[in-house]
Image (tube, rainbow, N blue to C red; front, side):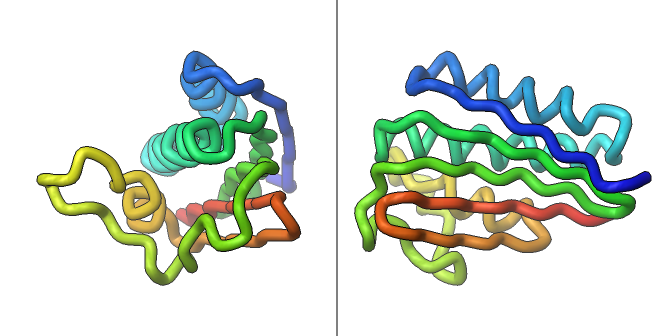
Length: 130
């Protein structure tokens, strides 16, 4: 299988978190193992939710599938320069915290995470191999 890429924009609405998850699932359905699809859908849910809650900006979701890997990239603007910790510091919050689990979950389900920020635009790419 060659590399396939698809993308879609989602406006700021918590209902669009569900639509972003469905978009990712349908983009990789049949092209990747189900466990990989599930991990990418989970990462998408966490990252899109964070973008809406913290940046309050629309997102672009980009899905790429290759012969033995798939990636999901979430791109949005409106993020403060120091608003996101370095990937190596992403941890899941303790059970007694109400929030703070999203980035830790993403870090744990991914084989690799790339984070890039230019000005107020952020791009986070989650890669899963099989």
